[in-house]
Image (cartoon, rainbow, N blue to C red; front, side, top):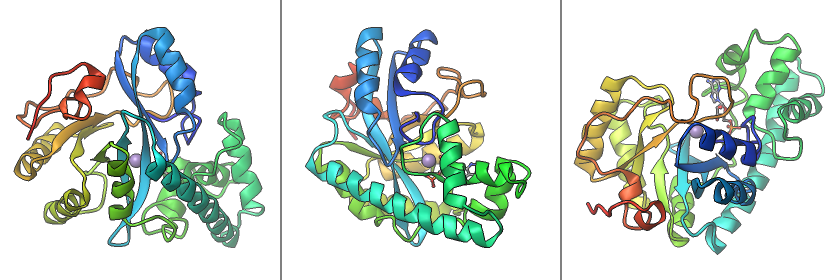
Length: 286
Ligand code: AMP
Ligand code: MN
């Protein structure tokens, strides 16, 4: 789940309160390249009886594509991930200037200021900018019909505003997670433009780097695709995670209402030996 520490719409404490209200007892806050919201979320979680796993979602590169890795950190960030997050923060700052320059070329004057204004309207003025901030600025300026259109034509994969040169290689980022005792989870593996074979190559490289799990269900996802992915995770000996990818209230992905995972013998990531105690769950080894 995301909060105003990255491109989400709710402050960490408000998000945890919503989760508690909806009867969800276990969650992870995984803001993009930031753990700035974790302390506030933990305070709220302790008060409301929610078990909150500290985490983040790291932007990385694999074969020149942007890939997201969810880091589940039962002991929080240690030296390796903390240093990594400083690097990610700087990378995101540099990237935002580059995206702004490219957006100015397509007619968005003062792109940086306009995107900053959109971030502020979303409740978070002081974090590094995300692509959705630029997407909203494009819509506001009449240069795109809506967010989807802004991504499709200007900011999505393969478009001008999809600047990825600054992200670290996948191996490096997975190394930070493992060094600090966390579990690295491949985020939304069905959302990348990859064939099944290529997805297998991605997952094998991920495992070689120390990755151990993948999101079997993420946001909206067709159940048949999840079944096929479950077979692939089984073949590879991975744990399965579920991610709502929640960003905003009011949408269809309210906490506790996402599609259930298909029946599978792939063990859930909360039963991973390094996470089970935290979640009060039985240990499952692969
Ligand atoms: P960033 O971390 O700055 O690269 O922005 C990533 C965020 O952009 C994701 O969390 C999504 O919320 C959003 N996003 C990425 N691709 C799309 C898309 N095609 N349509 C709408 N939102 C997108
Ligand atoms: Mn993601």
